[in-house]
Image (cartoon, rainbow, N blue to C red; front, side):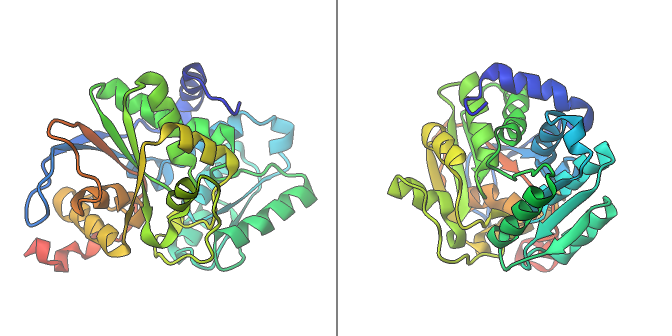
Length: 323
């Protein structure tokens, strides 16, 4: 299933429908001063998805596509937080033991939410890559299914159902802006979007301090970063994987970089303007627009994915925008 077709994505949409939400697509108009003026944009509010991010789409598809006798052994993953919540949700659906490995840079509130979904939480290593090695070792030792957050065709296919929703509701969209961590979201979204509308543009957004795909695409090979320097921990693996890299090479038009400060400004704007609580990763695409890192053409219709909920914008009430 490494080559995903439109019929694959449509089948996944039907499979996961009982367990995920069709999230709102909201037109916000021009983003006016004191922020830069740009074209009217639409926001896909996947921060309103169950567990607070897009991740259940892939995790539930993985769950429902794995033999039940394997699922009964318990499931395992490593996460920056959001994928772990989605896998915990999948484990809750299946009523099976779920173990989530987190790096030390994961916000404590996400660890607490994981426990509320009934998952066992293990803290391992400084960044996601460290936690991932430990998770894969447990899965192998105990013969439990491992739910990779981005390098699994079933997970990628689940994330791609976002494109089906967006283009069904707004078929005239010219460009999708998508945040990139390991690359699972943009792999699925770009493959499904191009299958439906070959001329659509897909723009990736990464933190300056975790430019994994940006650097890999420039080098025409997978680059492993020597260090991560961003507070957006859900966008911060040191490397992508071959399946994601190849899909992104084929389907993503450009990757732009934003700073943590720009993501914080965007998160504050989302809270002040719309009452949307987005974490840094969720605000990354809006940051690319507000900071002029991606400048739409005169009549270009843009949809930006707000991929994860959080409290990074709540400080808006004390920010100059609110005065």
